[in-house]
Image 1: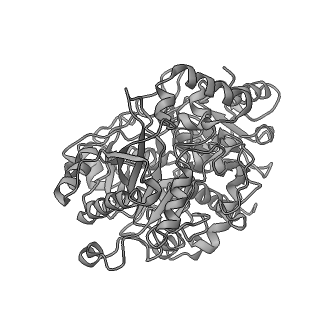
Image 2 (image 1 turned 60 degrees about the horizontal axis):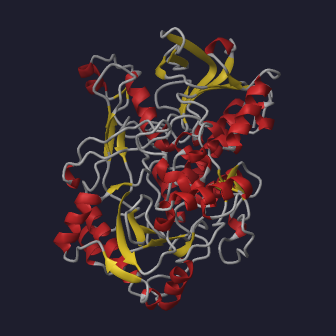
Length: 589
């Protein structure tokens, strides 16, 4: 079957034969000199490599553990996103430690591997969080450049907003003044209608006090019910591999080496950690590469702290107990892992116009996939939902009175809804409305640690879900709020049966503990803290690792707190900002 990304990567392979920089075919093709070596081709590494190589005198090598991610339509087709993880070739296939507050369940913890990183396997929702979320970064780092007003241009710089493929009028579906149109990452509103769209909008009209409509959740004022914006470019997933256009690869000063695992970052001299140790996939031996200026870790919230710890950068006492020689004592490495948690409420509905009908009909599924291949139209051009909501508990809520407000401020959501017209797995009968409810301002946190000296062993991932009591209270109220949403008159002839089967506090809490999962938005395991701060944090506001030279981090792990948002947008903005910081440091801004 035709894959646009396959054609694109074929072009890159051919181009590699006639330019000095591109996707390398083997480690034997490496040059002897690179200014910057970047670990990871996810949103952080892809964006910063693109921007640094705008200067033809700057050479960059990216080492990516996975492959080209060009071998399946599953990545390209937005609606197939739920098939990409867990337990697939595109996933690191991590799991958590047993979660005591979720009845000791071990959860999948998907992280993407290959070009695009997790942006190649996520479900594409593009949200930035509130102004208060981003301003909290400025407050935590004591650096105004990380606040909303200074970061908004970077959100816009990465973005290539494009019109939906069905050509419908998008008035009141986004606010163009808050979006970019000349970046690399496609963002769009839905390109195919769903049967529940009008009911969602009607509910905002019937119950505007509790469920106000907002034309754009990405203006910094996020509260309300609005249209989904997703990482889609004319009906096709737009991952961070979009930064690697043919024109970018033709620059000649950017190399990308795939299928290469990095084990450690080593010091060279003068406390400069600018040496990469990696596994040679041909010989099976460990080899070194030296960056003349810097190594940039962009291995993600899980991968980056794991590499640091194996490199001897972390809690010195813990590293010594494992038999790893501590080189830099930074106890915050791997700590403060923060993630969203959520659970779905499901109803049996009086309709056949849901995704359930498609999944049970192989002929219809194939017809719709062929439609996508032929014209990039139909339901496959969108992610799993056309609408979402960011909402708060009432200001007089007993939860807030008892526990305080864990959100970044009074204009920041406590929870999120995704309105899904059907389920994503095949059912034998029935049609369904599904509303995942996520706690997007959690107080709980956990850690990424290691228990082995083998750098290729999986790390221990403990997100600490529901470890702070307030979080289950917020999630319980979110579930109740979702039920009030479908009690509006707009749904009176639609809802047949509530399948949650939980009404009391105790019943809902047990439902949560048995069914809630990570929303896969982890951050903060290498968090920023102010210059000169040594008692917490891993990097300074310029993203240099504290106490060393030659080593910087650019990925979700540096975010000092978790926005009330899906996190791809934030990482693109971090990376765009990081590129300017690095350019300024070396005088080529």
